[in-house]
Length: 465
Image 1 (cartoon, rainbow, N blue to C red):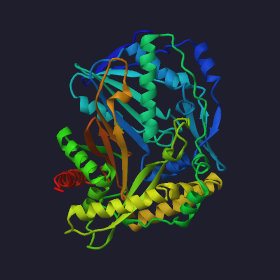
Image 2: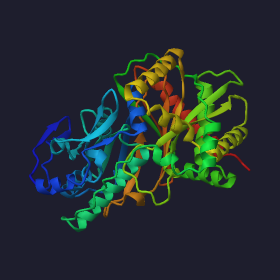
Image 3: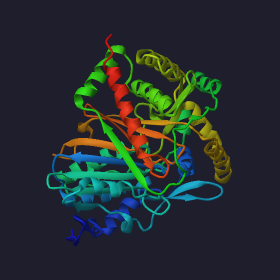
Image 4: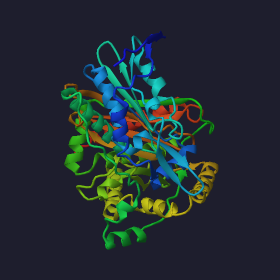
């Protein structure tokens, strides 16, 4: 591989674009196994339309305990764009439909930068995470490695129009697999996944008649609630905040969860409702709402093989705001509501609406949604979102001899009155994060929200049964 020229700028070494680490004929052979065009899924189209309120960018920060072999990793990254159709494609919209098309200029677009950081690591990561990605012009996923004096940090950003949180985790598993295999055999050639089915049809065709009837019977539109205090609806400067729990704190929460037979997700929803009610100044007895993301892959057969895609839906969970209510009582109500939703098929209602909507021509569906979005923005109401990536183990990301030490997610950046919080459990640690535009929300409010979330979670852990 050609050696890169490096320029120093503000304590950060910035490399030029990586040389292509494979013969063009080899890559052309892999490309020939992939479809040139394929339909966008219903969730792809939905997230594209909603980018006026949320920037639809998923972000990950992964700290490892040592250094990668740069040449092997660059090979792995290049190869990954030929393993899955979506990674080397561009999002295209026409009045009739939206679809993905493999890029003819893919080789000039792929990059795998290793950037030497001498001093302010957090600032370097911040600059990368807060720069937007546009899948209509760029690749839908970008990976960068920040090399410090002690270890490498893998940072990625992905367009939600292409991938959901589960798909991002699957991509990281793919990358770790490729890296490990190439370390063993530099000439390793993996099988290509040419699958392109991104449609919600694959979910509903696996449901029983009884399940389908249940979804129809309980299909109803959610009702938005008061938003948190906000400043403007401008969206220019991205910011994010992360709050962490120690292992000891999380183990206490986990122990109580096991003892009460209540999920960590239900704990998070309980805390979220109490903090939303408090900071959005809900009057006692008023309905509080959280919209939780749901991984629809749970409805697929156990051995189903899907491409990296969007198969995330949502479900609305309501409770009454009772400022003086003991948290033990709130958690019981939330758990009861969640169990009822799971029994009926959680997330299937909004998925069915999405499936029906995009039977229309794309422009028609877009007009319907844009009208709903405009009405919501004018009403100063919102559907506060919790996106919980769930348990992530270091062993899932075994990059040869390297160990993943810490992992964080930054959810899409939000514009008022939309509100979203991300949660990640990793290696018996828990973190909450919020990405936002500083023109929309006061940073002190965002920090207060996360601090109060932590306080509520720790008060749950202190419950004596």
